[in-house]
Image: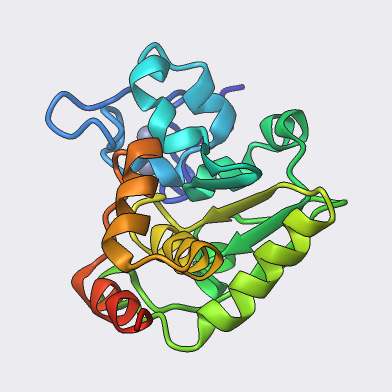
Length: 199
Ligand SMILES: [Zn+2]
Ligand SMILES: [Zn+2]
């Protein structure tokens, strides 16, 4: 165990397990890096796991549609347990370059590059993602939409889907998502684009 690096930012170092920092619960007390850089098993073995659940476990927003962080997409056991068949990865290249991302056998992926979280744009992604989600649900599958932290980008993709599926305005779709995942908070650019989608 001694040489296992549990944090992908701590090259050659080891923080063994993850513990929430008292100042920033999403950061590791030992190495100070964000939870998303840590190994899923190290987090699960942490004493602070209960408080960390929201950053790891996906939230079911509507039937068969889940929203979560990148850690949710790396928790193979839980994905199999839920029965996830499709994944929308809103982090694109970044996930492979910095976050030890890997595709899980048997799951169908759609990868998007929406740009970094603060500057993320929706662009014409909803056309593709809404169809991908619809196809999954129609065939009895279950889908996880994830970004880095499961807060902004993944939320905007699910909101776009719900607006289209239910023909409702942004605020109504947002409220629905927020009730199921309280940390959901699309950035202002994404909100403006989502609002303009409804006429
Ligand atoms: Zn670290
Ligand atoms: Zn650490």
